[in-house]
Image (cartoon, rainbow, N blue to C red):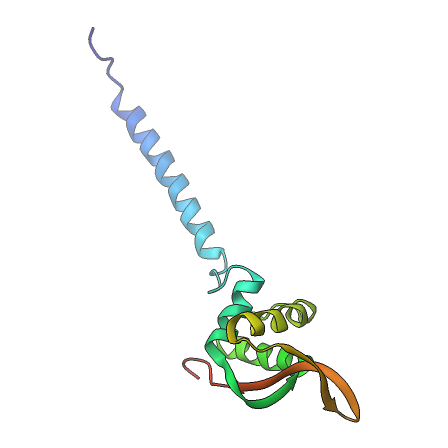
Length: 127
């Protein structure tokens, strides 16, 4: 049995259609915001904590850590996770990455607040 021949015009039309589809996909990819370094909230928090926080001699309340975390993210070109999410994840990740447990007795403005003792900060890369 012989092969059926396809008219050259049909081949050209199919290739042009495929090329048009490919160009459309490339345009969509260019319009999609670039992926951030960390795909999930926890992975991003972990990345920032492991890169920019170390053990030290400072005490930070959870609110202070959230503010510091947000500033670091902005300086690194990352979008910080929402404050509520950061408040939940920061103490957990600090314990896992640096072995620093959450304290419940940090004194600020005459009241006790939650936070972490024994924290130090380092500058984000490139800052």
